[in-house]
Length: 441
Image 1: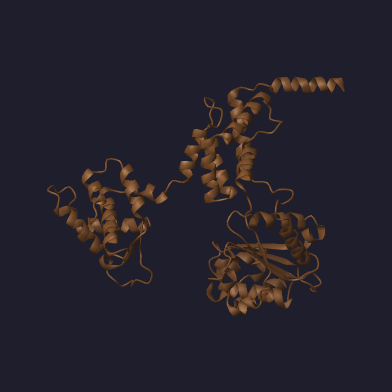
Image 2 (image 1 turned 90 degrees about the vertical axis):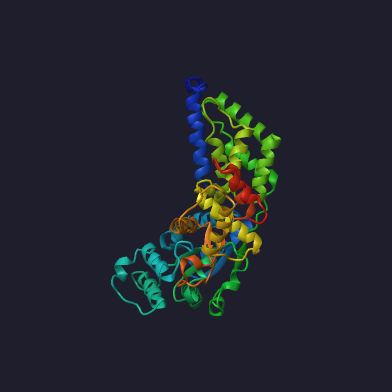
């Protein structure tokens, strides 16, 4: 026993004071792992009732072969995906469910039409060889064939399949809602044991469904609403940045944890965190902020200071479109200013290249020098580049046959974004700035 203690004390003495560079490397490695690879909690906090309800529903499908459909609804960052992952982890602890349950994960952002979705279902169920070169008359026939192919050796009962539809509302935009109709039809008619779980941020999602689809949905909804307080948010910041007791360099860990506590008590840091809390309670956006803070830690500056948090916060809130303007040419910037003046005069009505060019010419007529004189093809190219950058976009339904000069466009920037970009634009000519600030161009 004494021998073991002496070995432990020697080890502690050995690691008590690691070189500062090594400690910093270990801190960054450990905290990056924590912030990037979030572990599922043992028990979901504040959603115990929803967890129990969903687990019972999916257990009835996985073990008893009962078909179900349910929607998980809540704002981004409320914990919808985490709840589902916790439920699946607990469900698969049952050996029978683990052995028989098949899962298909679809996302409305990726599977943009039913053909792509069906291909993905076939791939995830490993049925490419079964389908082969067969030609099916309809989506329903194809889906029925896939479910038939999953039947067990005695062909008496099909294996239960769990369909998870992330961004569920986007599937409602598919032509005739064929995928939703067929999945919910199978779940209602007990042709095969399947559970359809939709995840969505839209509270009005049922209004998007066609009558025949809505009639086949069970109308079960699990609502998640974030009840997070700012105090809990601050505690999360402290817990995510704190080092564990078993950190090799005990003295460094103590100093680091003290500095994190001081950081969370600092007024300027608290204001920055409150701004983030008010804009989004999503922990993923918080982790991005903390990662930016962590990247500023060096051997020369081995702690996170309030200034680091403020700079990271500024980077998180930076306007991507205003930033994009800094890389434009003077001509492109002049066209943007001409569009801004057209917006001011015509109160947001769409414009075309010819109108923008005329506005630009008015500016040129007031100039004695010819440094801004450009040929029409050059102006056209600059206009097209602005469209590629999505700083302007065509008006929906504008005729494709219309000449490029006369296609109606809208400016996707507001007044403040343009003025902010001009202030920060390197070597922006004074007369261009004055033109932008003038009331009527």
